[in-house]
Image (cartoon, rainbow, N blue to C red; front, side, top):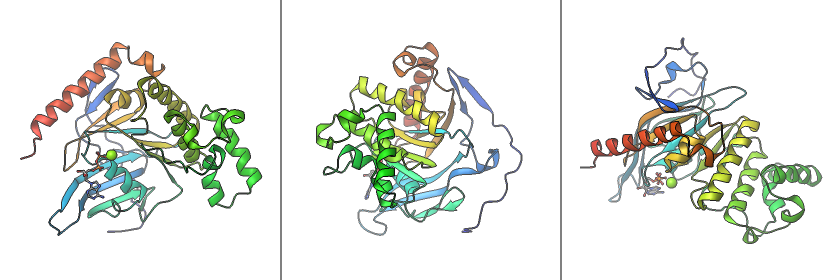
Length: 305
Ligand SMILES: Nc1ncnc2c1ncn2[C@@H]1O[C@H](COP(=O)(O)OP(=O)(O)O)[C@@H](O)[C@H]1O
Ligand SMILES: [Mg+2]
């Protein structure tokens, strides 16, 4: 496998698409050759087998191919939708370069044109579980990455306070609190601030709102879209909520059951209303209904033997 930069892109052939509600289904998962810009993430024939050669050997994903286009000054919001256990976290952690998912069993994962060799500050991560440091205050959690980079306290605290406000927390009230004093939504705000303060090119989010109540979840979706438009990063967001994927995503990958693979790709128009209003929009509902039927039909065809 070559580790040098990828060859230039040929002219951009358009793939046929089927319009649905507020988007379209592509007739195939896009290959790199149809992109106008080099990919920011590329999976080529990626397979991950846990415990290879042992009695409990298990293939979580097989022959996964996809590309995320680098859209300068914008960044794409990519959602991966699939049932529990289909390999979504495996894919995300391969992008992050985190063990034991990294390295692949076969195939290649490239980020910004280079093979992934481990974690890097170009990729920020927010998990479903609340991963703040219990013994650190909100401010010290938010500024943790800057501290690791050796940024002086005065500078990082100033930036940290800005980010506390940007994610909708109150500096005066919240900066000295500890994680156990925060609600689930507030903890995820801290996790988002801790990640975005480092200006990652790619933000990896693994069901970050999965444990929140519906109202808080919608507020967090609105917040995330607003921040994403400001920071212009590529977001790679995993969920098993169709509504969440349609609300947030510019692009949705639909995965099959294990061994997981990407079966369908959809392009979705940006949401122009808050989450709770979008949910009532007929075109939004049509899109959600279409994807629900599509998944049901894919599951029919992909029953494990
Ligand atoms: N470290 C691991 N060792 C062994 N099996 C794993 C490991 N991580 C995940 N798996 C298995 O791989 C499959 C896919 O897991 P995962 O990527 O976490 O799925 P998802 O995020 O879609 O729920 C599951 O069956 C899971 O049990
Ligand atoms: Mg998972």
